[in-house]
Image (cartoon, rainbow, N blue to C red; front, side, top):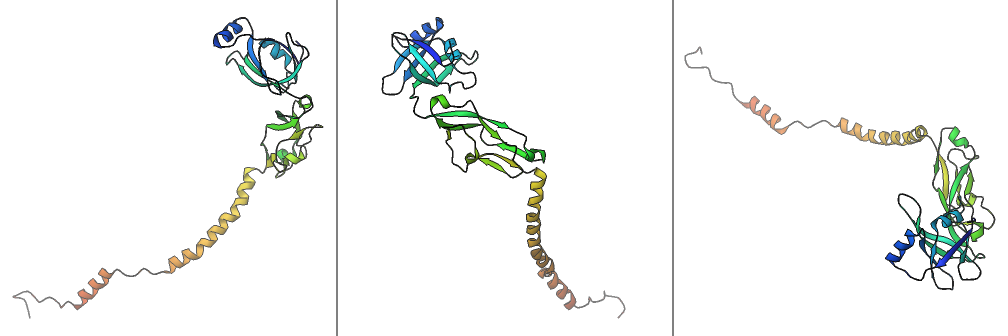
Length: 243
């Protein structure tokens, strides 16, 4: 099976038991839908499906589907697929009819290239997007989007409007969206935060002085006790003592 080519047979019966028997024969159920025509219940080889996909593009591969008993081929893409949890082989596939002349939506990985001077200066590269949503005709879907960071210094970023995209490919993000950015080292961030802390401490000093200038009022009980002690007459001598 060549990359981009897939053959299938029509399924005459459907259901859980039929699918189990189908998988026992080394085949899997599939459905082809979309466009103006009705859906087709198909059976395909999971091995053939895997080999028909570009090893780099994966599900973004444009496939030409040939159905046994039907003339011509149908341009499709793998819309959804179910795989075995442990073994990883296909268990079911949904194939979407596409128009080769009209744009489709896809998600492609991002590849960062070049030596970043901001990193050499101690900064940290933050890659906000590791995949990008794009739109283009099926055959023009790129394997990846490369981003050159060789001109990024600390505090600089690459936005969606800065991306160099292949001809006919558009990114489905706002132009001002940050894709990656180089941030300053933690030590510089702490140094930038210090002046603000000192200003806050300075603002608090007048209040501290005012508080220290206040003289605490004497306790009412103590003042009253001292006055009472001063007004109390001296005690009389004991009986029998000298006068």
